[in-house]
Length: 96
Image 1 (spheres, rainbow, N blue to C red):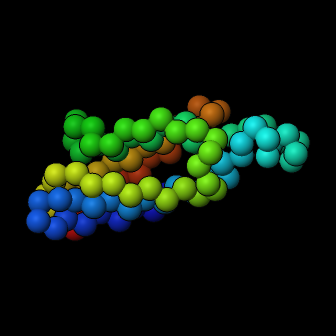
Image 2 (image 1 turned 135 degrees about the vertical axis):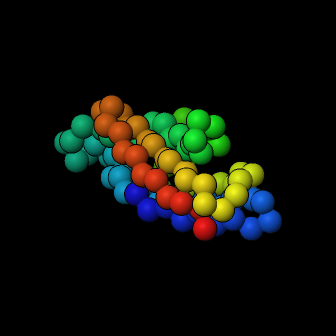
């Protein structure tokens, strides 16, 4: 997962790209593989949740997500996603 976090005027802009094959049920059936896609994404700064999304099989492969929140430089953002198999990936980035 790649994360860019930049603050400007008290607003932090997050750009995130998750590396995931995002196999929908239909694609998985054709490829004779089990379906697997990201089902939930959460972003936290400390104990505060700044972004929370339930997702489905309709996101593209290696999805790109962009969002904003009120924050400051040098805070650390932690982004975690969970896929259909229950596997989780977590990444952290300091706001610049």
